[in-house]
Image (tube, rainbow, N blue to C red; front, side):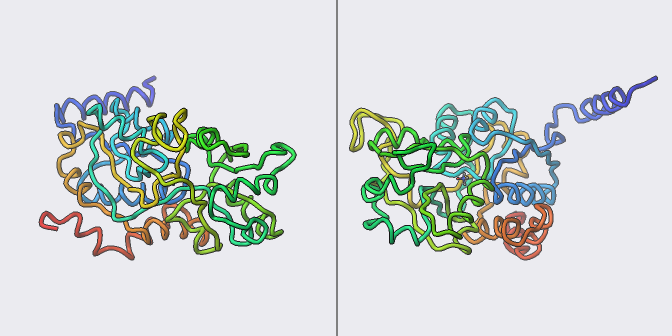
Length: 315
Ligand code: TMO
């Protein structure tokens, strides 16, 4: 009996033989990560590239390790490179020459410790980080007492929170949530009871449409803060600063992408999501409870003139 795999294998082999060195026949591999705007945006970017004539394949991938994977050619395109989370990992591969900084979205981003507005009553002096530190015990749980509990995102978001707590000498313990949904679930419960909470959040995101709150103000971010211990308020440690406030959101591609997918590369270089685009992508799923595919279809329908311009040779 001929197995299905062997038929698929020989058909694939035939296709590859016919295509010869025309790598354009190979699908563009886009990773899927664990926050909502990225998942919706991956579908949107994929459909736009399909409209431009490419094939697309989605690969679930660790968002922290994806830059190394892209350097090795296992992933083609990361369309949501957040400076606060992934700037260091991304720029390292760009410096090596195996990843290209292909485009910068219009969106300006911030990723930071954040609290709902009612916390200010119990902790005067916020949003200053030193005021937060004085109130650390307010945020303590049995797991962290007497230290305050900071609820961080999944470890793969590479936030460097432990390093920051150490660098700034903070009286906090970092507890990493297992998922974005776990962050939002804890925020909902705490808000209902007016219970102090400080957790990782970012903008653009759907949270700002549902909750009042503020980012904690840490010592200003500066170039080298996360790489060079000698810089910053603590000369012994890295991460003695906040995250960038008007952080970039970029698109990175594998170095072979322009050669393998020249038409798609032209489109990618014109792509630009705004703050509203990113916020809407998350809201359609997290608030309106749409499926990712339906949310992507809605965004594409509502923004047709925008992305059609990215496809046009003159646009
Ligand atoms: C990368 N993220 C938006 C979750 O901070």
